[in-house]
Structures are given as C-alpha cells and as structure tokens.
Image (cartoon, rainbow, N blue to C red; front, side, top):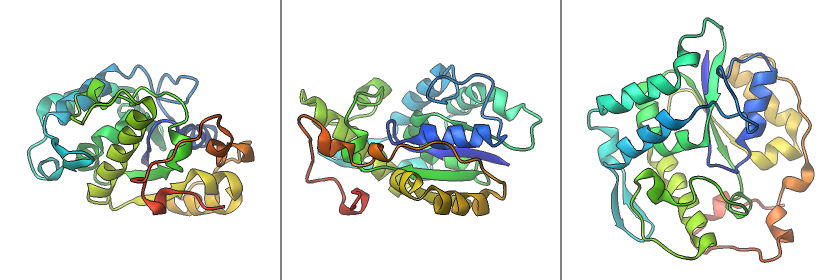
Length: 235
C-alpha cells in the first residue's frame, strides 16, 4: 500500500502522518518535527514546474483545466521521483508520505499515482491561517495571484487556492475525506473509517480538543466572506 496525506499547511496533517508512522507505515527516510518527509527541495521545485500551467483569471479565479489533460512535464516527474526516492524504493509493505506542499501539485500527483490511497485532510480555514506557513505567499511557488500586503488575506488566498485546486482535481479512485475537527473530537469513529479504508489497524495518538476553533480565542480573529460555508466547522 502507498498512501499520501493531502492538505494545506496548518490543517493538522501532522496528526495523520504521526498516526500512520506509529502504526507501522514507512513514511520516508527522514522526517522533521511536523512528520514531513524531508528534504523537500525537489518537491518545491516540482511545484514551480506545474505552476507554469496554472491560468489566473483574476481575483480568486484560476483555470486548472490544462493540468488534467496536458502531458506531465518530464522534469516534474524526475523531481517528484527524486523527492520520494526513499519511499518508492522501500521494500516495506505499507509506505507513504506527507508534505503539505504536495497539495500544490495534486493534479499531477493524482495522474502519476492513480491507484494509491489518498487521505484528503481539511480544517476550518480560520484555524488554518492563524500562523505563518511556507505556502502563505503563492508566488514563492510560481503560482499567479493578486498580491496583497495584508498578511491574513494572503494566507486566506493561499487557503482558497488550495481548496479550489483540490476540488478541481478528478477524484482518485481510492480517496477518503477527513476533517481535523472530527479526528480530534471523535477520534475513535474517525480512525475506524480510515482503518476500513486502508485495511490496517491504526494507533490512537493523544489529541488536544482546544485545537478546535482556536481562532475564536485569537487576539484579532479573522474571517473572510469567500471561505465556503462547508469548510467552516460548526460546533
């Protein structure tokens, strides 16, 4: 089995990666404190290769249609295979990886690996954008957007871009959708679903209920009208 976790930075994907690793899934030769497979440089460059084919139509509108039909750039394939070398070359029965920036190249990852297991991970965007992340400025990965000096808005635009990219990508045949809030507030039931999906037993890691709706306690909580209602967590 080969599995990956798809979700924006600060969406809580660390919890899923840690769960997989502690359950015996080989998550790569070297992991950082966020349970990301590192070094990430080749995958970051792969993001820039694919971003050349994203069309920005202004505001919060992007056209991803070319990504689903055009030939995948051979440079992209080489970079991804280099980044994943320890996972792809492993003889372990169950293998996987997690790096939030994988979300930025989901259309081509799904085409490269159509038969692997995908865990689509989401979290209330108001919590996801509370602190800085490497993907806050999409331009760092060659992705076109309308720049702004408002840091919170920049993070929100990054969140929205990745949300729309995930929505536009044809669904892999093996996919499960998981909310961070459900993982925290009802871990047993949520892990039960994931166990059935992956067909392996999973350990239970400590969770922190206070991580849910943390944005409400922020000194200056932010919200944006363009956040889709279905993405917001209703307690």
